[in-house]
Image (cartoon, rainbow, N blue to C red; front, side, top):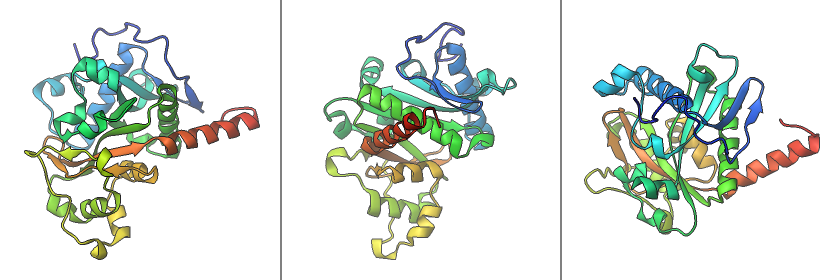
Length: 279
């Protein structure tokens, strides 16, 4: 039994966001435990088989990436309805956790690496993003657009002004990542009221290169697409990085004010409505 629970039980027939479709692909929230299980299988393939993270004995036996947070979160999926060879056709996933879910569960996932009290102190809703992955065959603009349009719909539905989470840079040697970490610190550090800080026992300084010596183009080229996507949305980073030896990554805390996300979503669907259909 994985963290999702019994397979086949309906989770939420009252999904707050409608499916978003393009061709054979559809983005929507998981509505059955079997779909969460499929997301966990995808996460295992990407994180452990492709990216060579070190699985626990239980994860290796089940071939699933799962934890106690799965049962408390909403799971956003991209499904290819033509892929009968994949569990539930799941080719992309994001894990979403709002304040109320974190309060019921006891914590946000990020709290194991960062002091997120400045974010928790914000009024209104906040949302954590995590466990993002996409099957290698689907790492393209249509798939990512689907994911982000669905996130925007979710954010708009729940009136979420701030979202956050941990994002990873491949490699567990901060010295080798001096350039991209220095760039993030100098150019994208979150304002004080929104700035998480790596826990003292895990804190790694984010680079030592002076701002004037940074090759911005080279620094951006060294960042993974997901982090660059957050930055294009006006995202910030917290203070300090955290090395995750299990996943062979260096994590940074990402904070995004969602006004740009929802504005893009609203403009997209206003254009779609004028055309008389979906893009």
